[in-house]
Amino acid sequence: MEYNSAALWILLASLVYLQRWGSSMIITKELLEETCQLETFSPMCSLSQRIFITQSLYGHMKIGKCVKMDFGRFGCMADVTEIVRQRCNGKSRCRITAPDEEIVQTKPCVEGLTSYIETAYSCIPELTSTESCSTITLNRQWKYITSTQIEKTCMAQSQTMKIETPPSMNIEITARIINEETLDADSAYVILSDHIGNTTRINIPRYSRTSVLYNVDSSTVHIIFEHSKAIVLFGFRAVGCEDLVAPELTWIERKRNAITIGCIHNEYTWQVMCIGSKWIGFRGNCTGQTEVKPDVVNPPEMGQKPPPRQTIFTKGISVAINKYLALSSITGIQYALTIGITVFLCVVVLTTGFVCLRKAEYKVKASKGIELQEMTGDYSNTWKATLMRPVTNDLNNPNASPPQQFYVLNQQNDTPIGTLR
Image 1 (cartoon, rainbow, N blue to C red):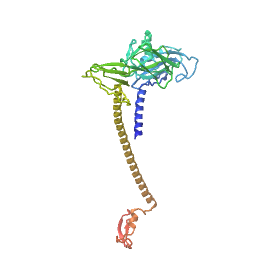
Image 2 (image 1 turned 90 degrees about the vertical axis):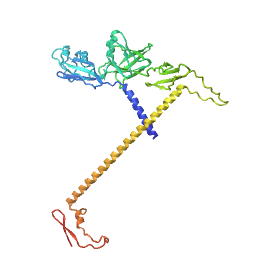
Image 3 (image 1 turned 45 degrees about the vertical axis):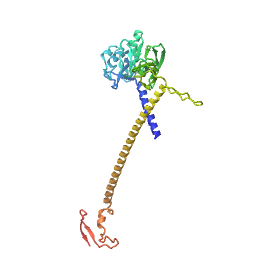
Image 4 (image 1 turned 30 degrees about the horizontal axis):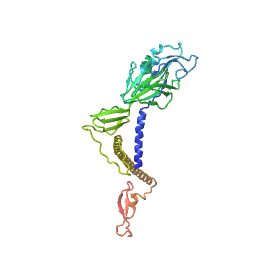
């Protein structure tokens, strides 16, 4: 039972970790489509995602779906990415039918050549709107922006994109290249600068199964993304614990993930630690307290070591851990009961199904036996043979010779109509 409980807790912890780890991942795939004449380009994404056009070209590019033969005129094309982005970006679905009047007006090739639209797009989370390089304030929910937004709003004005969180909280950053199929570079990079001026360069590979994840130990960061053909999708969120409001008659001193709380009237203090997004530790109370003299402690006897001194912080952590373990044992019992009841119901259903199946087999075998007797004429095990056996009147003496009495059967329906002696 102990091994089963341990395995159950390991499974639950793994699920919680995978859920948190999976939530920070950016999963995208760039799709490339050719739209020939009289066809319609109609990309679709799920309701929680939006279309982002990474590239769109119009012209006579290469042999493929729309062009079957090489006449030596390949290479004429026009970049119509902005035209297609205006119609599709930020939507779950859109439609562009070829030939499109606005796209055809670009006229990249001579008349007579077959021209088509080649479009690449990705399905990404909904983007945060950015105007004139304004500061983005984070909370615990993910916020997404692209490198193209940074280039248009901030880099065009020679500024950096500023990201900030509530005081004393950290910033979690995830990044991924979303035009990996049409990009001709192997990687891209971004530079992060915190409020002190420390800079960090993050390399973002072109092909990667998971997105790059980075934690900034600061409540403010500046994003510097140099112009590149790579289109990077960034995700930001605030992590850590928010500031505590000082209780009555107390003072608070915070150092990142630790807070020291003390009473104004005396030297009584305690500490709490930020674990995940919660403050864990002993919570004291200074209400109504006055100056208290320290307890008189008798010196230890000769040869006796003094007992180890336990700080208030250690006591607080011990109390929190004991409460957590108590709640964990109750939750483990609930899970064990749920699993036990489920297994019991499954056994009942399987047993009932097996019994019903066996009964059905017996009925099928019995019906087959009767049909076989009628085909062969062997009625040794039927009621006809029973009626044709001699009948004795002496029930107490089974060895007594029975009288010569037989039933006479009707030849039409095999029913007895009389007896013969």
